[in-house]
Length: 95
Image 1 (spheres, rainbow, N blue to C red):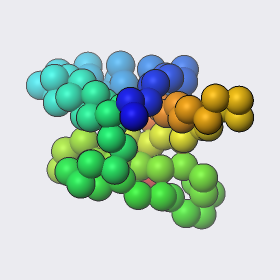
Image 2 (cartoon, rainbow, N blue to C red; image 1 turned 180 degrees about the horizontal axis):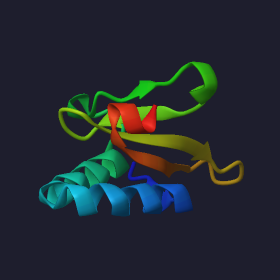
Image 3 (cartoon, rainbow, N blue to C red; image 1 turned 90 degrees about the vertical axis):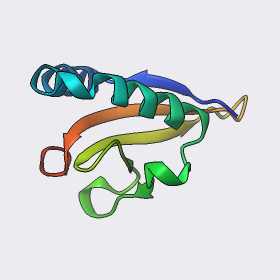
Image 4 (cartoon, rainbow, N blue to C red; image 1 turned 45 degrees about the horizontal axis):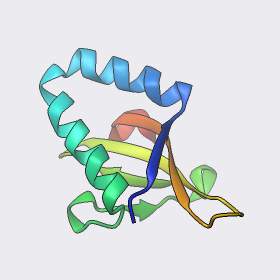
């Protein structure tokens, strides 16, 4: 089941900053976002639940030290899941 990706303002800002600093990663990030939409538990994404102050959020790997933080929202009427993208950056930037 393909999930819709929604981008928060914080994600858009962090993505712009990250891509401007790492333009060579843009294509990889697009591939990872497409994969996330199609199967958020794809093994190469290494998707995991976060703990502590980030409880309720998930993170996936978009490369060696690139992480995407997101939330899964379920529509109560349709039951469909949407992925709300929260942040992207290095491990230190997003945690």
